[in-house]
Image (cartoon, rainbow, N blue to C red; front, top):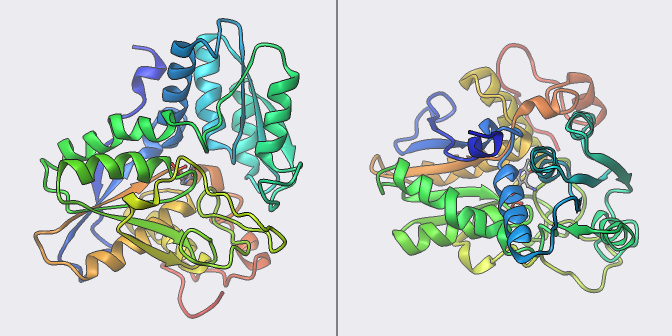
Length: 332
Ligand code: PMP
């Protein structure tokens, strides 16, 4: 088997400690166990396969993408394995670990200004589009608008969850970045059984009706610059699939991320914290027959210098956690 055959078929892990007092079962879909450490390996492989099939990506070609990191890592793995040069444009809020990981796989990394809207020439997607135009034999993956991104989850993530739960899944919870995961897996689960699809969104993200102001959790939500007139949502996000959206503060997300490591022994990124906070809110309303599956997009290894670093927490305005145990009190 090649490393690409090791993508997907991730296990479901039942949460047992942070679910105290909750009757419903809550299982984590452990996407951090993919070879590149995130759910985006699935989308990367699916998009490259589609581009090879359509002839857009030819042997010896160049893969280009604008990404907060994980899609780039997935593309870099596929590029390394299949002999493509890979160029990845990342916003400057991406963690140092993600950038170092991309470089370790041999990807060329271009760092651009984060926190600007998609219509700004400095935005990752605009820089990536320019590079793709200027580079001979380049193919722009375009995860925000590429149907092979949600397609990956329609074909793999959704069916895996259905099979692994023996069709007993009642709720599926996931964060929304490009929307690929929730749209693809959500569509499959909607069609296959009566499953409620729950989106987990940063409090100020525009997906859930927030004002679009900045937040700390990486890779999910929709940031809108105050001067933006037109607010374009990615085509990979199909809002009709989402039955319910839960808004979660940075503080809640980071607290839960730290608790998952200390209390469950599961080291994940803050977007998992966001999704688990939403999942527990939903699960609290349910009885013992309910089975909630919450998707854990990536590993906490990528954020040791951020959410798991007490100095970073203090500098960002969050109270440092008392050790051992979860964060307490009110805050941002
Ligand atoms: N969490 C993390 C850490 C991610 O990298 C991503 C992908 N951008 C997501 C959540 C959201 O997944 P999707 O793009 O499929 O909505």
